[in-house]
Length: 238
Ligand code: NAP
Image (cartoon, rainbow, N blue to C red; front, top):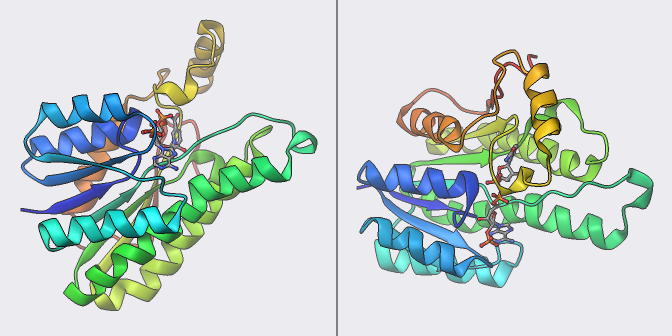
């Protein structure tokens, strides 16, 4: 049975990934931070889901989470760095506090959880890390510059770690979603959504299951590493 740690799994994309992987018979540790009630409901949905509260932007909490997983399940086969936040602001209005918050939650978190998990993966000479980035890290985003910087940083980490860890039989890939229906986009009006659909060749907004299907594929694959796979309905084609 694979042991899989998914960060930010109380809501949205992470929740769907956790649910889907548990349904397929994996042991899933679903991390959450604030949304405890939602995490508990998720846990009740499958005996294969365990939940763990940790703010993944804080080293000490990450250490405790990884220690818990290793002491309880003995290993971590797959890490999915999904936790993230977004903020819309003109670049000239962004404060140092905004910068720190977004960088800590989106980029430092992926760095920190990967570092803690990798001790075990390198020891086992086996592992798979999937980082959830964004199309905005690829093409840039007006009024979301710091978010885009963190997502481009994640893709840089993916490519570098793939080179460093390939000899240890550890694959590292990014999934860069386009627009997916989750709380992260709840500020968009119906008109905004219709306008976006017009810009997307497949004429629709993505579902969380579009991302979890790609996660399934990457986990089962054996020869893909260092790639940024963008699931975006054709919105961004590079
Ligand atoms: P969401 O619905 O807002 O959910 C975000 C999740 O991240 C929540 O479960 C939240 O947990 C968790 N989280 C945030 N900060 C955390 C922290 N410090 N520690 C632990 N958990 C934390 O967002 P989503 O749309 O599913 O986004 C998931 C990932 O996909 C993000 O990295 C996002 O940037 C990326 N993405 C999303 C879209 C999109 O259109 N939705 C597009 C491209 C990329 P709590 O509520 O428990 O704190």
